[in-house]
Amino acid sequence: MDFCETSACTILNTKETSMRLTELVLQAQRKELDGLRTLASNELALAELEEEEGKPKGPANSSKTCLC
Image 1 (tube, helix red, strand yellow):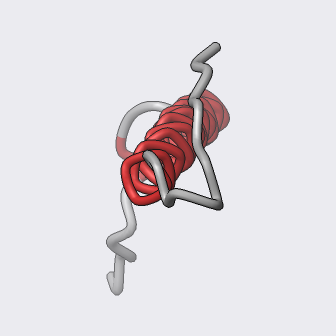
Image 2 (cartoon, rainbow, N blue to C red):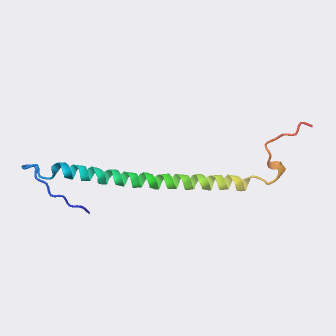
Image 3 (cartoon, rainbow, N blue to C red):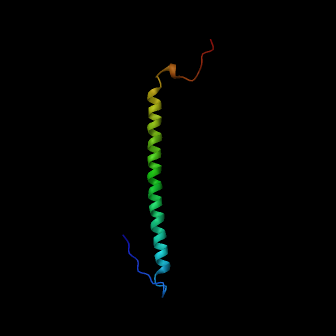
């Protein structure tokens, strides 16, 4: 945890502290978004695998239809 000493009276470190807090918030949001992206891609991959497992193998699974 970061600690920042500021003074509203002398304006000591107010700009630097604001910038640092903004950076920390943005870093936390990026980490959260990266985690959500990873989770979503894992769920998509799992859904695709489940879809593939449900399909029968061979020519019966072909999307072509016989017109003979």
